[in-house]
Length: 135
Image 1 (cartoon, helix red, strand yellow):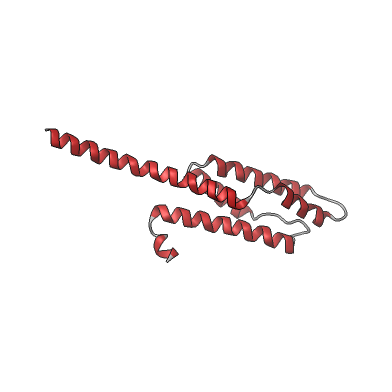
Image 2: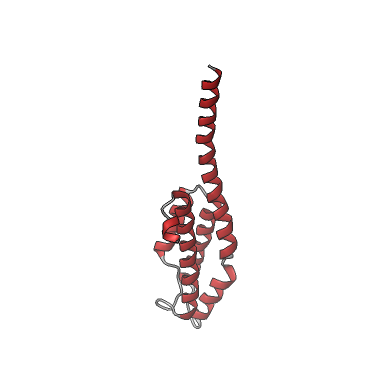
């Protein structure tokens, strides 16, 4: 059912956004179970996709969120010394903005952008129909 809905551009963006946030959540859960070279980092491709989506739907809050995630990755990379894994994981958990809250905020941004694009054609049709009625 999700695949059928994904064919509609508006719904497709929301489904894609949900999948990106699911990937983010999975990445965070996986980072607490295993680490790459001793430091749990978020995948670069995930951050790129989130930023691209932020640009596409003009969501400043998503772009800010991505900035926080990139800063978190930088802090994690900078964590060195004994018990670095534990320190990096604490950093991950202590400084991570809430995923679900951000998803709801970005979904609202996406719907607002779509609504704006739906209103424009309706207004054009309304103006054209009013002009043709009056002539």
